[in-house]
Image 1 (cartoon, rainbow, N blue to C red):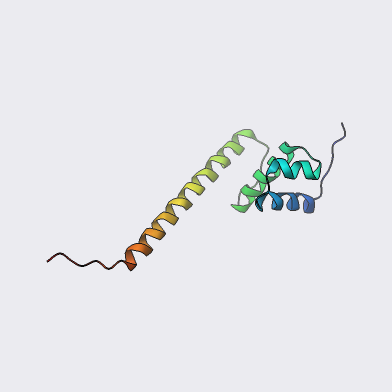
Image 2 (cartoon, helix red, strand yellow):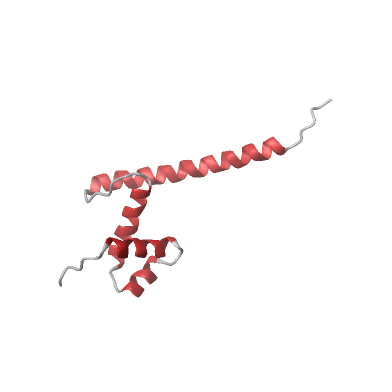
Length: 97
């Protein structure tokens, strides 16, 4: 089977469709491409959005995936703390007498 070369614009558009909420399966079907190819593009786009350079080395890719999971976890923790601080700053507490 001949290898198909996709343009960077096509890749960006496909990733944008996935990021807009359409499932990877549906985007791959609509664009007539393999789902695994689209998954790789989405993964690489996530790496790039966090300043990481995509790689083909499985060990490095695993490390980057773990780093992205940790980043998401820390972002969620920060959001919880931000909301708690906002709530507590607006609460009116009366000291006990």
